[in-house]
Image 1 (cartoon, helix red, strand yellow):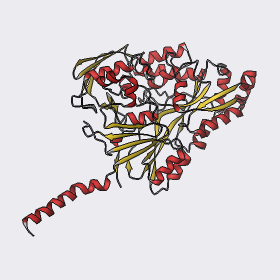
Image 2 (image 1 turned 120 degrees about the vertical axis):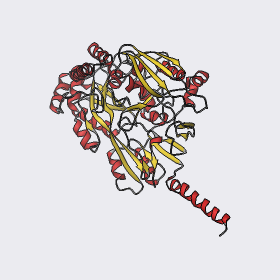
Image 3 (image 1 turned 30 degrees about the horizontal axis):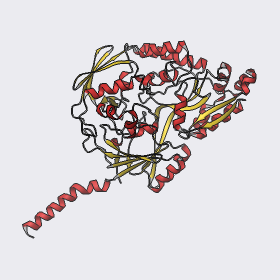
Image 4 (image 1 turned 60 degrees about the vertical axis):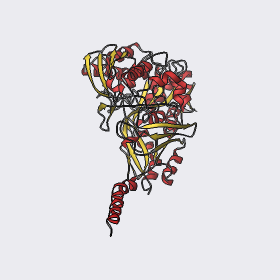
Length: 500
């Protein structure tokens, strides 16, 4: 063989050694089946699951959580407390937005100012309104000032996505939502309304790059269809499966089940400002009528866990020793009868296809068995959100809901749901308002837990909401997808991989 021939063979061999392993595990497109299309791709507007799953891949956050749940650097490389109310963040100097412009401290300060501006109207405002000032003190330094000590600050900042000031100011809120520009591992390509959102891998990403050149998030409202797509190999990941559908994947040659107990808590929301649930006896009847263990074991297949408080053990602020009212149908019936005509008034139970309707129907049946006249009202998720976060006059009589702040801190759950300043809240209870403020402005861990104990006990006594269970989220995934779900339900594509 000639020298040239030996060189050619060697070159081809080298090419095979470097390309073949990747080629065996390569996949050009990741297809994710959601329940609904995102209601927003602007990360500072909604943070409902279908939106959150998509935009968390387009944007970087100031800080993030790793797969173990620890808060770690992202846009910020480090931070230090200058005082109880001032925190200084050092910002990476090697991040560029998808349009090629460099991310600076000005963008970080702008992002904080935007989401904390009441005129912007973010539903997330109550999560960040302890921040009263954000200033870029240098191109790579940002100082945040809070209204008093704020122990949940870093936990909340894991959700703070950094948006480009120059783009947002140039195009405005509505246009930015339609064509978002971030700095994350994936770039926005296209939003085919009602069908899918397409992203492409960012080749210039500063961190761990996305393993799939293209990622597609499809709206597939029917859960059985999501499972069928997995089994047919036309989807690689499907969200929000119930236990019955998960069972269909146990022996599938193409798909598998992935599950984790999350920080999300399912609960029954009640508008205590509207009849008939302004009657405390009827709220007590509701609490006695619901068999939580029956829901978890009989319907949800044991993936979930009943809880006595509006938190999960994954949260800072979970308090041991809180007890819920036991299931007691006889007491529930007696309380409904005692309420007289109010107990017969029709109660609308608002829900949306994103929720497990087996659970909603079971709750309706339990309440009807107690003598309550409950009627299920179905609506799309966008309408559900609008009604639920528009204050007591608009919030429905009753609704099934599941809440996650993606922060794993009680402040991100209890404050928006219960504090009277929040659009989600209707309790208007001065005791709870005071305790929530006390808990969010002390750095003393014991004082925080004592305040949250007071909140949990007050909720238990007044039944402003009925906590049901810690949600065990169930995904269906293609056999080749390597991914570990986390309690905060983040779907970071660049933390996934593929193995045939």
